[in-house]
Length: 80
Image (tube, rainbow, N blue to C red; front, side, top):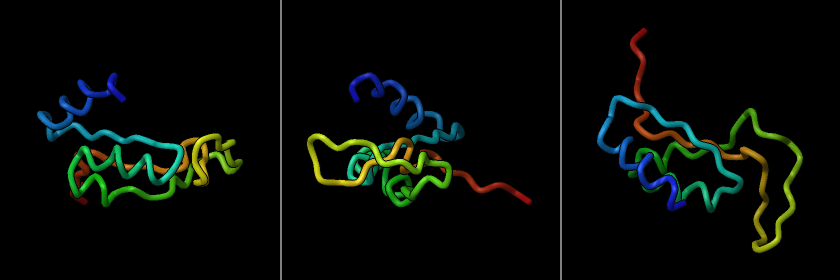
């Protein structure tokens, strides 16, 4: 989305800030996550907290769920 351009730019310039996003379907999620590089794209997975009811699909033949997929920008490891 055009309105997200400043958020993506901010995350790119502030590697210590973690961004967690959700999307309706895997296709859209991988396209958005790839803006953060390969690590963000590889973080795409089913959201365990997604709404289990499928959303209506009007323009593509892909399953869609509210908050169905989650991906992370600037993923960081926590010290234990």
